[in-house]
Image 1: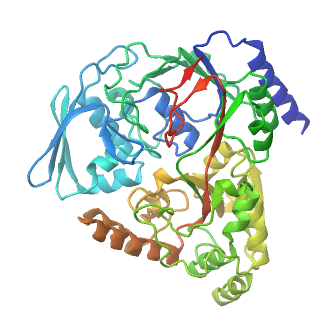
Image 2: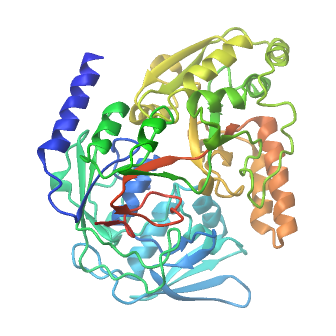
Image 3: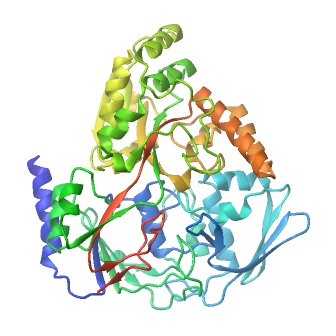
Amino acid sequence: MRRLLLSAVAALATVSAVPMASAQTLKVVMHSDVKVLDPIWSGAYITRNHGYMLYDVLFAMDEKFQVKPQMVDTWTTSDDGLVWTFKLRDGLEWHDGQPVTAEDCVASLKRWAARDAMGQKLAQALQEYKVVDPKTFQIVLKEKFGAVLEALGKPSVVVPFMMPKRIAETDPFKQIEEYIGSGPFVFKKDEWKPGEKLVYTKFAKYKPRSEPMSGLSGGKVVSVDRVEWVWIPDAETQVNALLKGELDMLEAVSTDHLPLVEKDKGVRVIKGRVSNQYAFRPNWLLPPFNNEKIRQAAALALNQEDFLQANIGDKRFWQTCKAMFTCGSPLATDAGMAGLVEGNAAKARALLAEAGYDGTPVTLLAPTDLGVIKQLGPVAKSLLERAGFKVEMVSMDWQSVIVRLAKKVPVSEGGWNAFSTSWSQVDILDPLMTPFLIASCDKARAGWPCDEELEKLRDQYVKAATEAEKKAAATAVQERAIKVVTHVPLGEWFGVSAVRSNIGTLNPPPPVTVFWGVTKK
C-alpha cells in the first residue's frame, strides 16, 4: 500500500510540475498504462488506442457501423468478386517523410492477417496480393469472401493499421521496434517514460479527408498540438487531479467516483455509445478445463448480475445479456444459452461430479489495476467455489496478465487456467471478428480452443450472402460455441469518461477513444 501511495504521489507530481502550458496541450489519463507499443502483436485496448494515435487505416467504421474509405481513394471489384483493386488517396506520407506506397500496405496486411481473427479467414480465401503501381494494389481471392471491406475496416483488436514495409515485415509474433505511422499524431519515443508518460504531437503534414468526422471515419482534424498520456495508478488521485484542473480528461471513471465527478460543474461526464461485454475465458490446454463438461459446469456456475453489480454497480451503465454478439445488434440471439450464467451452483456441482472433477485447482488470473474489470476475478472465484471448484486466484496488474496469457506451459511453470476480461461491442459483432470464437487450436487466441466443427460453422458465415443466411449461420456458431464453451458472456456495461468543461469532443463519441475532433478552449 505504501508503494502504491508513493507511486500515485509521484505521478501527480509529474502532472503538477508541468503547468497546463497552452490551450493546445491535452493531459489525459487513459484506462491503463502502456507497456506494449505494437498494436498488431498485442490485443490490449490501450495498445490499440496508442495505435490509433499514430497509424492510419485503409477503411474505417462510421457512427452507424458502416465501413467507409480512409487511406483508400477508390476501389473496384471484378464481376466474379475475386479481384479487389484499391487505389490510395493523394498526399499520404509517413512520419519520416517517405510516401505511403502500395507495397507498404500489402506488407501491413500480411502481418495483420497472421494475428487477427478476420485476417486469418481472409488469408484462407486469398490467392495473392498484387502491387499494380506505387499507389495501387489488389487482393486476389481464390474463393469469394463476403467481408473484405469489413475486414479492412475492422475498428478494434486487431486493427489493420498501416506501417512502412520495413517495419511491417517484422515477424508478426515478435514486437516491432520502430514506431512510424502516417496518422494524425507522431509518437515522441524520446519523451516516453514507461509507467509515467507518453507524448504525441500533431503531424503537420497529415491531410484529413474532406468528409465530416463520424465514428472512426471521415476527416481526422487535429486541433491540439500535443497530447500527453499521464499514468496515475490510483483512481482517487486521478479524479482529484481532474477536479483540480491538473488533467483535461479521464478515459475511464469508476462508478464509485461518479457521484463526486457528476456534481462538479467544471467537469462533463460522457457515457459510451457502444456496450462492452464481460467474458470468462477457460484454457483448453490444461486440466481441469481441458474437459468439456467441466467447462460447461463453469458456465452454469457463473452469474451475470453478480459480475455487473460488483464491477459497475450503477444500473444506468449495465445490462444482463446472453447474446454472444451483444444485445441490440443485428445478430443478437440467446440461442443455446438457456439456464447458463444464472449462478446455478447445484447443477454445476452435479455436472462436475458427472465429469469426474478431481479437485484440480483453477488458477485464475485477476487484474488489479483496471477499475471496470478488477472485481471479475474475485466474483468468479466466489461463484466457482460455491459450485465445488477449487480456485487459486493470482492477482497482478493487467499488463502482467497479458504477458502470462501467452504462456502455454503448465501452471507450475507459469501457466494459467482461466481469466475474465471485457470486449468492446465493435470487436464481437459477428462470428468472424469475435476473437474468442477462433477455434483453430494453436492459432487461436490465449485459451486455445480446438474445435473443427466450430471452424466449419464460422466458414459458413463467411459464405453467407443474405442477411437471413448470416443470422442463421451466426446462431449456429453461438450454439456450438456455448456447447464447447470457448468463453462465457458475463453481461454488458457502458463506459464513462470525464472531461473538463472547456474540452470539446465528438458527439456521439467514437467506439474507441481518439483525439482528433477534440478541442480545448
